[in-house]
Image 1: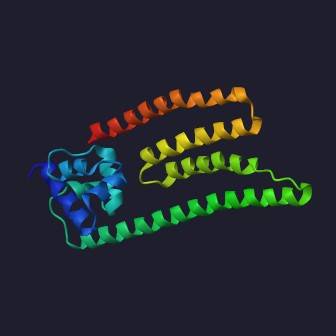
Image 2: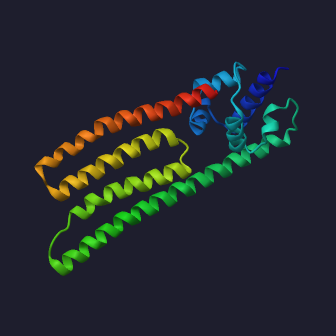
Image 3: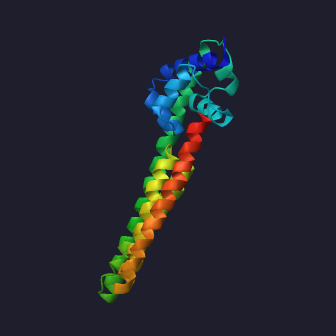
Length: 205
């Protein structure tokens, strides 16, 4: 049997044993369900890096993906590995939410203290908390997200926009509204950078 057909058969069996759809697997790997479908039809085979990612998802070795004969016991192992990965992913998301909630809680605490001692409401603290929160989102996304490319595109854009907003509101200078024009070349640059990233992944498939 051709290696593409062997891989197609193994991938399809592993995915179905784990109770995953092609779309769900594609999301984990930052690929479309159409690409996963091509793999399972034996039309193409991913490169070594993606094979490694797939092996990690199902808790098997790369060799397993490319071998024709397997023992049934391995399927259960792949289900357990997938379940463990889901638990780890949930823990990571919980940590992210707790840290970001802590940042906002700290901001409100500082505002309350300022009000108690100065009787002034420093609302700008909340405005500056926004870019800090989006920066944390970028860091956590880079570390743990299953959709790094897509999520980082959104969070980087929001971070820059919130930072410009914070600078503008802190100065309240009429001339500084032109700062927001920076977003135009920034968005164009981000678009092409991430387009290259996704195109590279597609070519790898």
